[in-house]
Amino acid sequence: MRTLLTGGTGFLGMALLPQLAEHGEVVAMHRPGTSPAAIDGVRWIAQDLAAPLSDELPESIDAVIHLAQSRRYREFPEGAVDVHEVNAAATVRLLDYCRRTGGSTFTYASSGAVYAAGPAPVTEGDVPQPGNFYAVSKLAGEQAVEQFGSLLRAHTLRFFFIYGPGQENMFIPGLIGRVRSGDAVTLAGEDGIHVNPVYVDDAAAAVMATLDLTASRTLNVAGPTVVSVRQIAELAGRELQKEPSFALGDRQPDLVASTEHQVAALGAPAVTFEEGLRRTVEAS
Image (tube, rainbow, N blue to C red; front, side, top):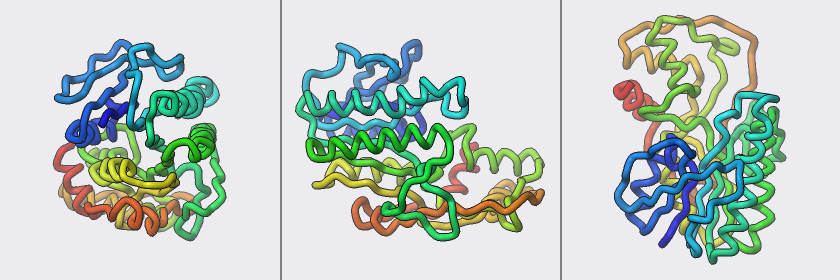
């Protein structure tokens, strides 16, 4: 099996690469000007995903996994063009490449941000309501994937708060960092929002499972444990042996994913949030 992977140097991509390499040949993209580490079974190709695809790509492929996203996702409007090119336009180019080169499976990494937050767990049947340009670009990528669903086994995975050892500048490591430094954790309401984050190994396992799906699917990918921001900070404090401090802000709606379809199609996540956080804190 020959697989093309974008985002191979990213947090999820690095967890996924060894598993992909065990299943066959992997061609992984990296940003021009970077030098990714050598990995057995992986051939690296430099590719700016805001530009046309490289002529170095294989002439035939079995599967494409598109994990990469624009680094400028927080920069609106200055980064809007790059965000659209990587998250939406590159998705179309990669779908077309997969089709033209004989691929049968395409997996796209989207985000739970395409949903509106609210009191009930969001399901795949809910109408997307993206609230920012990043989420709009992800939804545009999803819609392109859906259009290719009659030509490929074309899957969209909506990830919710991926976390794990080595991650930086994201939701969970940010909370851990505030507890460690003694800074107050701001809560939206008494306990803060509720979420069900997915541990990186479970996220990688979900991607691998899409390679065996027999029909195109759009699926949430979240963890097995619903926790509040207060609970996350308290668990981090216990691991760090530090008492967290809190500041209260205005109540905000939760963003919890229904995982019923995920479990049925991809398998249940194996790592509880408490265990995943312990591993994350120990490695930080």
